[in-house]
Structures are given as structure tokens and as C-alpha cells.
Length: 240
Image (cartoon, rainbow, N blue to C red):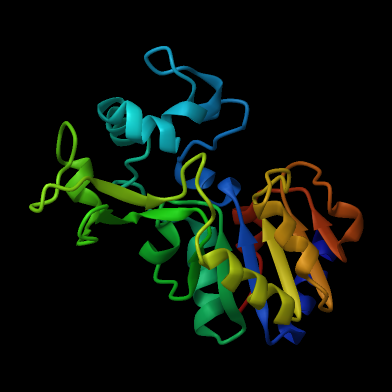
């Protein structure tokens, strides 16, 4: 492991344009459940429905109160704090080396730790808006309410997250640009098996591809450095 840490330290030291691409494994160390893991949200039904439906556009439109009941119970992370990885990435950004964080997570913990350029390709619970007048609302407006949240204009207030059946937002195209231009791409806490997000790695043609994940990914053979460990354990040993 010491040689692995030294190699990662060397890669970071010599890089001036780093992009971090992360998944659920970034936030599990804060106590947030992942979706597809052994004890993930997708392993259980809620009121007889699978999470794939509960977090879908169809559920929001056809079974709206059920959607918000599930959303409030399982996606309210307001009391959750960032972990070592979030704070490490914030420091790396402040150093000028990290140019962007591309995340599949919607929990807002990167922003909570102080990171500025966060590309939420699946949206974020931090932003909510009226689907009629587009007025924006903070996350606690939904989490601290009950029933179906309505705007003063009568429209439905919905979270700015990408639901099943919806297209990815504009952050995805922006992520492609950053990944194409960076000299080092660090991928962490993601199985790289969920598309189209996983396809982002294909746009990388820089100098160093680093993958840090507790399990094997389909892109391990393409990486310069592969570390099968927790992100917090690795980043706690890296100096900025």
C-alpha cells in the first residue's frame, strides 16, 4: 500500500488539471446508503413499490404523494456531514489542482464541505423549483413540509434531480468538456457500471487515469493506478 500511496502522491504532485469523478462510495462513509450495494436502497420495497418506480417521473406525475413520502424518508440528508473525501477534494480544489468534481450523488455534501465547481450530473436535493413559474426553493422547504409541496402560484415544487425516465441535465455535457481537457482523472467510489454516467470515462485521453473503488470496475485495465480500498483511507494519507 505504501508504494501505491507514493504513486498517487506523485501523480497529484505533477498534475495541474485534475478532475474527480465520484459515485455513491464517496458518501457512504458519511452514513448515506448507496443504491445498488449489499444494503442499498434498491434492496427493499416501500409500500409495495420498488425504488426504481418511486424515484421515477411516472411516480412523481401519477402517484405524487407517494413520491414525496419516499423522498422525504430516504433522501433527506440535511443532518449528514461531509467526510474525509469531501474535505480532501475541497482542499485540492483550493490548491488550484482540482478543476471540477463530477458527481453522480445528489446529496449536496460536496457543496457542504466547501467545494465550488461541482457538476451534479444527476441533479441535487439542494435545488428545488416550481414546475409552473420556476421559482426556486431550498431543500428544507420540501423536507420540512408534508403532503404535496405547492408553490404560491399553485404549481408543484419538485426537486432538481434526474428521475428515472428523464434526460440527464446540462451538467453532463459540461462534465465531458472537463474530462476531455484534464491531465489526470481520479475516479472514486463508483462501480462504473451505470450508464450513461459511466460512459464519461471514455472521453478521457489525458496522462493519468486513477481508479479508487472497493470493488473491480470494467475500466480497471485502462487505468494507470487502481486501488481497491476506501476513499477516506487513501486520501487521509495524501498531502496537498
